[in-house]
Image 1 (cartoon, rainbow, N blue to C red):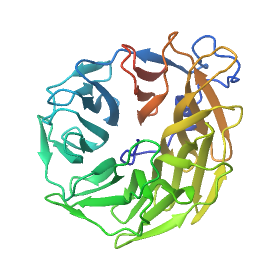
Image 2: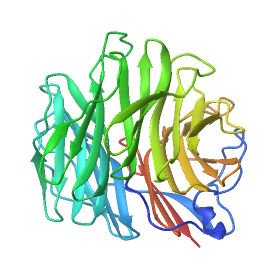
Image 3: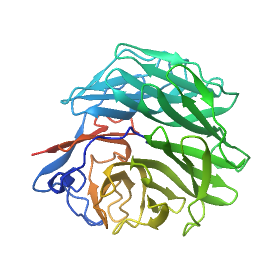
Image 4: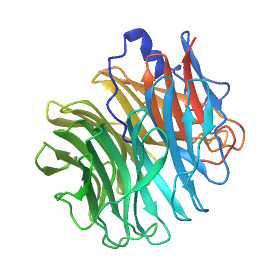
Length: 370
């Protein structure tokens, strides 16, 4: 799930079209949503074997994407501003997956995930020419699911002990830090039932990780102040079994976190001035959020998927934050295509790039300014 590096600059009001494609009711899923300044489009993404799912962009012409595969080696792809091109597969055992990626330049990316064959963490680094596996401390059954880098010498990765779907067995969270040479495990104030899904660092002294716990069922956050982690419970959700899957912190002390719950309702938590406040997206009765990207405290895009029962459709869901309220948009996709966002990055005021978690040919999303 999605933790991206901090994006430079602040979106101007006109550029908020990146995230507001048009206010569309949940009942209206006909036609591609657009507004006067831009539009979303689906786009082909390299496939086979495996698929790329997670991406990080450092400019309008430079994005890296990684994914999973049942065969040896993992699929990777690059974005050049026009489209996706498959790259040489990253080294990895069969049945492995990279679950998140963070890039600070076209020649520096870190991706994290798991070796499924031995239930162990997987960390890989990109130097602009090839992917290489990096050694990270771990033990059996641990997985890394989120990473955020602020430079070539500082990254934070978070994860959890693997548990079968639906299991309420004890798990536990995992935090590791990169210093440019080595990965080391960092103590975090987690409970045995915690899971961390995503992390975002505004600087080397300010990071927020989010996830959930199973006893009691609630979502959680942990904060890094440059020397230690402290735990925050954001508050009891309206329904049990809630989780936070994505977080973005454009500046220190300001974050947006998104997720959902087992009742298929979206959840949004905003951190500002050391205080968390909870909200839900207007007009979306059924859907979950998987990723969020903020360029400032007043400019965020949250994405995921929705379900329209009247038409049995699964449109992608995008919602924009203007500093005071949310505006939601549905992006209809091809018939039969379950098309929620899995990841997103907005590298410029005129471009946003996203990926789905499906194996359909048109699994990419692109917003371009007209």
